[in-house]
Every structure is written in structure tokens, then in C-alpha cells.
Image (tube, rainbow, N blue to C red):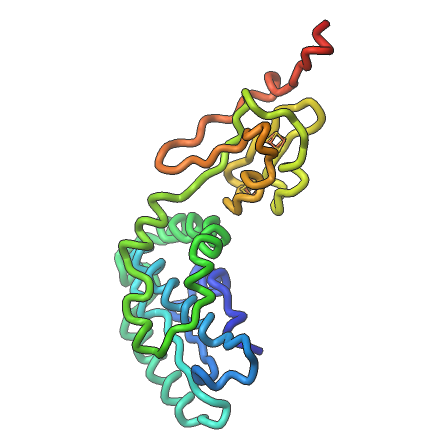
Length: 235
Ligand code: SF4
Ligand code: SF4
């Protein structure tokens, strides 16, 4: 119904399925019938995704957003024809940019895992309303996006501090934490979407969840070493 519903993930999925271009049509800016003005969200999402495409090594012109009203059939036809022509000129996705198919798949896969994280980190900007279309120039910068990827945060449970209270395990939205009663909890880094919920949820008196950036995440503690022996039980 609304261009604001088009998520970063939808666009990434289209490219990951081999589409050579993605076109999004939205209502004219400032003409939304609702207070949500979802077309601004769509515009911000496109501006961000274009920078992600540059980071991936893809030509950002493969993604386009145009704003028009439902009564502007001619404009729609012109916009779509022009975009189709452009995409044909650009050639097949990846191949035209000199990126091997497997390499492109793995780059896309890496970004896919980070989409929820990117949406959290860039939430404020994604939800903002630009003054006009001109203000979109430089709204997201290449340096900003490169920094975002190089400073990605990971979460790690310190085995020395975890008290197996299970709070983080219950709150993790993607079941990335394994543990149980009297078991040191461990984060599966492949499943973790870096939402930070465990970091916020771990009681301050334990402070077991660490944020890690710019350095490797320590290997998980082996299964056989995860049982916590309480002092009272030792006696
Ligand atoms: S950061 Fe989020 S997804 Fe990752 S382990 Fe913690 S709660 Fe789960
Ligand atoms: S909330 Fe903290 S102390 Fe409790 S299980 Fe998770 S990491 Fe361990």
C-alpha cells in the first residue's frame, strides 16, 4: 500500500535473487494522506541503500525511486521506460561491475545479516523527514557507511561473569543464545542480529554481556566447561 513499507531487506532480496535493477514508485512528497509520510521513509531507505550498494561494489543507479500521483500514468510510463533503458545499459548485476557471482553472493549475505543492525544504528535518520528532495544530497555519505561496516558491534557473554539467570536467553528475538539453568550462556554469532537486547537486559550486578568492536570475538567456551558450580553446592 505504501512505499514506506519497502524495507532495506526487500531491496537486498531482489538483488540477491539476481534482479539487475529495482524501481520504487511512491506518492509525491508532502502529499501523503496520513501523518506517517511513509514516502519520506522510502526516500531515506533508498539513499541509505545506494550507499550500501557502493560499499558492495555495485552501481547505485540500479536502484531508483520516483514520486508521482496515481493520476500521472504518463509520468509513470516515462519513468519506468527510462529506468529499464538505464538498467539495460548498465548490464547484468555484478558481472558489469567485475564482481564474480560467488563473491557477490557472499558480500550480499554479509550485508543481509547486518540489516537489522543497520536499521537500529540508522533509525533516527531513516525516520527523519527531509526538507525537500534537494536535501537528500549527502544525507548518507560513503565514509559514514564504510565506518558503519568497519565498526560493527558484536555481543559476547563473559563466561567468568555469567550467572545463568536466563534473562538474555528469554529476551533474544532470534534464539541466538544457548544456555539453561546453571549453564554459562553463549551467543551464536552466526544467528545474532546485533540488536543489543541482551546487553540491555543482563542485570547490572552481573554485567556479563560485552560489546565488542574492531577486534575479534573470543571463541565460545567449550560445552563441557559451561556448567556453573555454585559455592553452596561445592560444600
Ligand atoms: S544482540 Fe540481540 S540477537 Fe544478538 S544475542 Fe543479543 S539479544 Fe540475541
Ligand atoms: S542475562 Fe547476563 S547473567 Fe543472565 S544469563 Fe544472560 S549473560 Fe548470563
